[in-house]
Length: 324
Image (cartoon, rainbow, N blue to C red; front, side, top):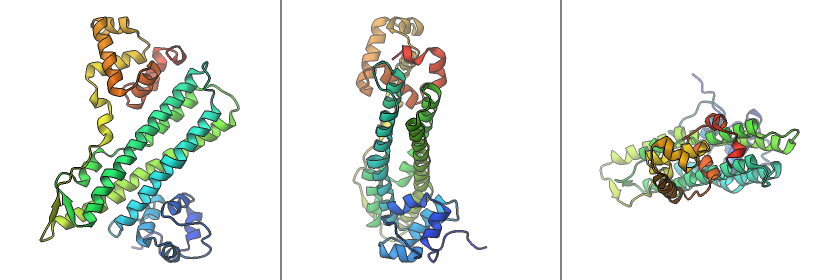
């Protein structure tokens, strides 16, 4: 059965004509435009790019047949690092600039403030996610390339905690569409499209890590374990930033955050949870210290971002403008 994947002899411009998303793939491999009629093989060789790795990523992004068995992990890590740089240093900051221009962040526009704070919280989470991969996961794989197996870490640890990071952009889009009433705002419509495209790009990026990067690393781990002499390293890996998620809070603290999102004051929370006002005050102080969030608006954003509540619950409980 013939594969429907792209081939080294295919013209690069034909690939891009098939799927314009491959323009981003080219850039993350360091391949410039102006490809003329040259083949994938010619273009990759002229840019010192591993053609097999480029083709497998291009095939995956284009929903064609792909394989992780022939990947160059060094080349793929270079691609993933460039993608991280694109998101963190260009795309996400650019979306924020357009968002600020498109909405009214004056003192009378509480919804706009919530939107910007939600976005900033999200970007902070993405940054932690990608920095963890750069500093821990990719360093681990670079050790593997030297034949060193870490007894305190494996790619399964990363894979078990790896989760999509584009989903919250869908929530942001939903917040804007449902709760920001403004007509004929073409700039806001434009930034909404940017948010949608960014979410799709981030989702594809995470899937490349899950379905190409992780399986390829597992093959290397298996090969090292099966070798006659295994060299080990016990250098500890840093903990995942997932430890910053709501698991650091007690169940009672989570209950109090939910009450705050419903617009309750300390007395109302105390009555609702059968606590003293002093106990509620102490819990709120501890929550602020743990999360470094000191405003009601910030707690609402945190609760939405970490799925302690959803947008519908907040909308039903009160008018969002009256709580900020």
